[in-house]
Structure formats: structure tokens, C-alpha cells
Image 1 (cartoon, each protein chain N blue to C red):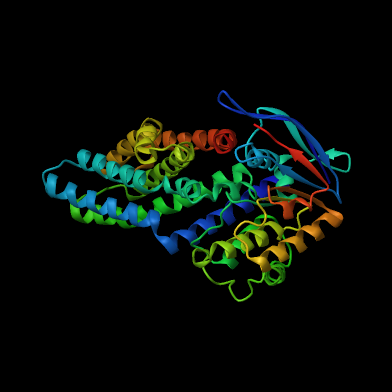
Image 2 (image 1 turned 30 degrees about the vertical axis):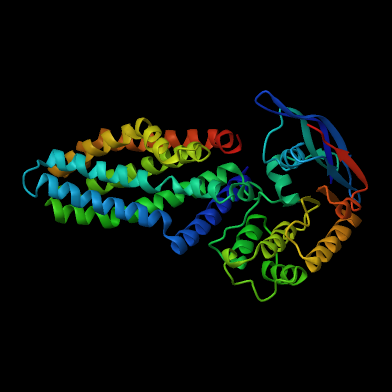
Length: 227
Length: 204
């Protein structure tokens, strides 16, 4: 059992490395995500204006930008394998769970890189401030974990469909809604409060969501991937 | 290792593609799957490799007296087929390193060098796969298939896109595979067919 787990992690790590190498050669997902995030950020800042929106609205807008930017790029991880006919080749060398974990790690990495750039920009452009920086970072990290897990599973489901782009956002939204809501609430709390206890239920919710979705995905991915 | 195919059937919706296909192959044996276009040769190959599930029947890989589980038999299989592609953004070496590590191959660099030489691709290891011609891609697929020293080599349209030099090299590989391991080919090419000890006919 221990060896099986180690093999899974080994497979996941190799697939993650392969995807990173592929991504930095093509910048397929990176370009889509960053351009979308940047355009949305500029559009939001022009539409709302710098000082007219309340902190609550700005918290919501930040998560909307993160969600839709993620939607523009996180599906590529499986769509590319199907469109380039490499999915069968990958199936021949890797276990389904290893594939899911590798792709999940890649999407998580992509989301972290996006947030590393877009969040400071958002703070600067929207004149957004948070009192509880640690709370905000925790919400962001746990939210990313949930978003990546849900989006990776949905990406695998839609990769064999013909209208992939539209389906991904439509299918992901109900699955990822709890993350968005908890993320917005957590961010709203981080604006006003410094103590972790104040955002306890949101952080617990985000953590529990991630655990449930990752566990469900590991159990179900074999059926999604091989059917 | 022994390959046992038991009463395989496959339906796509109402359409029955395969029905009651059964055969066995043990080391040193080879077979050729034959049938007209659309008869289900590729479907049968994909079922045997575990890429799709059959509607009926079973495929078993037996090592000693034990049946090998799915994750393990992937390591024992080498597959070449027109529907398998390598990562075109990566170089041949990057592709092969990735697949070899996934298959837990030892002495990866030496193995890549010797197989690339065997398929006459030496010097092109660091070229992106997208720059390869279709014939070179087919040769590279053989390197991919052989990198884990497969006990079962499955070749779907083995000589497609290859020039005469490539075909000779593939026939050498097939001859060698037949000696101690299992070889299964899906083809309608008369020259390829002579490498199968017996024929499995599929008709839709």
C-alpha cells in the first residue's frame, strides 16, 4: 500500500513536471489566464471607478475575476491531451489517480502564479485594503485549492465534449459556487478583522470543500478518464 | 507472461462492432488481427491495451499463475498505433525521458540512445517532435513502445508512413519480439501478415 502511494506521487510529480515544461514552451494556458485576468481587471476598474465601490463589492469582484480567469485556462490541461491525441499515450503509462493528482498540481500552480500577479495589481488599481493579511492569504490559498480541485475534475469531464469552452464554465459554476461564496465572505472578513477566529467558519468550509472534492475526484476519476 | 482474450464484444450504441473474439498468446507466439476497414481491428487493439472497456468478455494478462492488475500490465505493453501521439511541443528526448521515468526504466539515457540508433533517429533527439516528418514520428513511436522492454508488443498498422529502410527496421524488431515475447499486429498488409503465427479475423 505504501509503495502504491509512493508510485502515485511519483507519477503525479512527473506529470506535473511534464505539464510545466509543455506550458512554458507554448504558454497556452498562461496567456489565456493572464490576458483574461488583466482585461477583466481593467474593465472592472474603469466601470466601477476607484473610490465608489465598497469593500464588500471589491471583495466579490476580486473572486469573480479569479473565477473567470481560472475558467479561461484551467480546462486546457485535459482539453490539450484530447485534442492533440496524447490522452491515450498518457493512459498507457500512468494510473488515473496519478494523472488527476499531476493535473491538479499543475492547475494549482497556475492559479497561484495568477494570484501572485493579479492580486497585488487588484489592490493597487482598486485601492483595496485588508486588515487581516494572514486571514486573506489563508482564504486565497484554500480557495485556490478548492477551485483547482473542482476545475480539474470538471476539465476531465468536458474534455471529450464538442463545446468544451462553454461547458466548462457552465458545469464548473455550480460545483465551484461554495468556494466563491466562502472566498468572498472570507475576504470581506479579512478587510475588517485581523483575528483568524473571525473567519473560522469560512476557512473550515474552504478546507472541508477541498478535502471532499479531492477525495471524490480520486475515487471517481478512473470512470471519467476511461469512459 | 500470457495474454488471454475471452469472448470480447464491443457495441457502440446499437451498433455491434465485435462479437465473441477469443484467443490466447504465450511468449514466443505472434498473431495478426485482420479484417476490412471498419471491422473493429483498432477497437480490439484498444480493448486489449486497456484503452477502452469491452461491452462483453475479458482480457487477462497472466504472469506465472497470477492475473496482473491494470496498472501493472501497462508496463508490460508496448503499443504503436496511428491514434497514439507524442507531445509535439517537447523534444524527442524530453518525451522519451518522461515516458521512461513513468515506466520506471533504468539506464534511461543509454536506452534512449540505443533505441534512437536502432530506428535511425540518432542526432534528432533534441529536435521538437513537431519538426518530425510522419515517417520519423512513426519511428519515434517505436522507440516509445520499446523503451520499457515490453513483454507484449502490439502494433496497429505497423509499417504505415515508413520508407523501405524504416520497414526493414520494423521487421527486425518484429522478428526479435517473436523470439521470446508476444507480438500482436493489426494489419491488412500482406508483408506484415507473415509475422503472425495465426490470424484473428474480425468482421463487423
